[in-house]
Image (cartoon, rainbow, N blue to C red; front, side):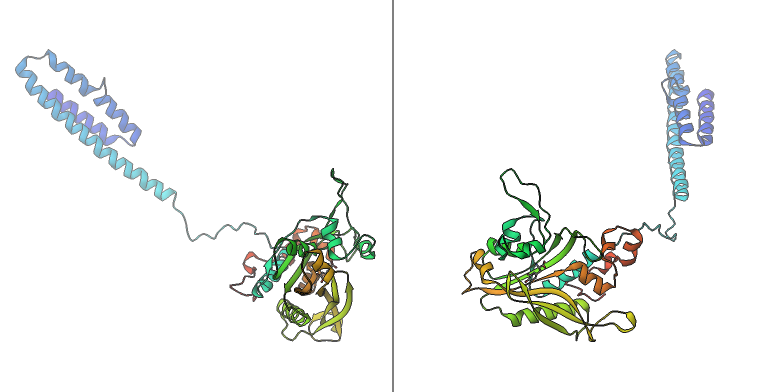
Length: 358
Ligand code: DAH
């Protein structure tokens, strides 16, 4: 009996002294494992006389239960202690300032495109798209610019090497081919804008070989020049955020419109500073006109039943005017300092829900 009690006392002491879960596991193996002290003592029972064996067996079983219970309790306590120390060590300090990652900015071209789209969406326009690589028909012929037309020379076109089928493709010189694609793809009425990249073989202070335009097209039964004026007046006043912005419609010429006009907005240049609004000066910002009957016919529309207007504007130009960006070429230099200065935060994005107010 003394054996079982001594054994039990020794093991319980070792259990109490086990400082971590690994040490406790060693104690368990040394007592209850296959070669453990209690296991060995149980095996020894077989050599005793039957009456001694009973009492000794009971004592050993009681010792075993006590040891197993003590190990479980110690294990739970050590587990809790380990969790507590991890919680203390790995505590998150929510009061620390956040580590800011450098945020990019929205390029002024994207910003202005978004602003224009939001304004036109409010007027019921949808956005149409066309390919940057165009054919001669959509870029010129269908727009009433036949082969020998001098306007072709004015466009400084980038031509691609002739394709296998003999067709010569080109980089679109304006977004006007999207008018043609729209009218040929779906029946009227139409009310679309086509924002996108355009290309001309031209490079100096005021020209880059790639630039952006927004084209507009409205075709309906009785759309007239008054609608054109109202629409563009609304556009300019909303975009430049000047309620009484003066507009001037100046007669002009485009092969695809008749009559054609160019639209100027009022400005002043006091003390060398350009200000959009009433003043002594004018700035040309877009071309427009009533869609030429030949263009309608080229798209399969009967000019006796359908008519409308079109316009085209340079995105860089209006971006420079609105945001005071002096040099066109800087738009495409990817200079991070420039982008940080002239770029917009994502939260500045215009949307229909929030209007253009920033
Ligand atoms: N496509 C012309 C250009 O690139 C701009 C333009 C003028 C588009 C008048 C039009 C328009 O739709 O009616 O210079």
